[in-house]
Image 1 (tube, one colour):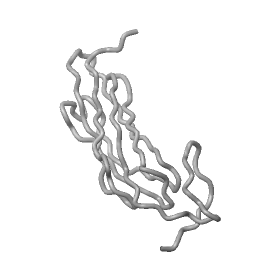
Image 2 (tube, one colour):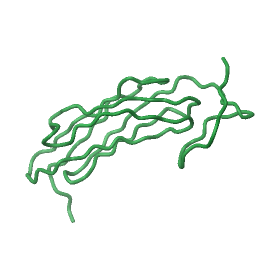
Image 3 (tube, one colour):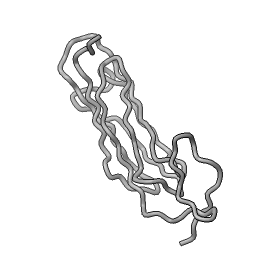
Image 4 (cartoon, rainbow, N blue to C red):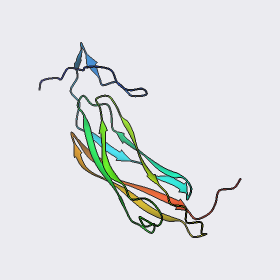
Length: 138
């Protein structure tokens, strides 16, 4: 296997790819996972997407929202896209806007699904967003 050269710098807060003598050391295939979030109606959901470790190549993964008891258009704004992890970067965030319907209701939830990984595989591809039906105290 031929190692790829590490070129340029890595973004703020990123973990650098393992480099030996200016060359990127080969790694096993990285996995991608997404976390969960709990929000109130007037907030924005933020789901952290992480790699199992720094990589020497660009990693991409697509995502899209999926209805649960919460429905797109009335409880949250549907969203889809692709996250791109530059070499050395191990974390990204998917944000989803929550719609405030000004009514008291039970907690509702929806999902953010990861799909179509490039240069990686998916370890945990379902992030759950729970929307509280109560207003926060204070």
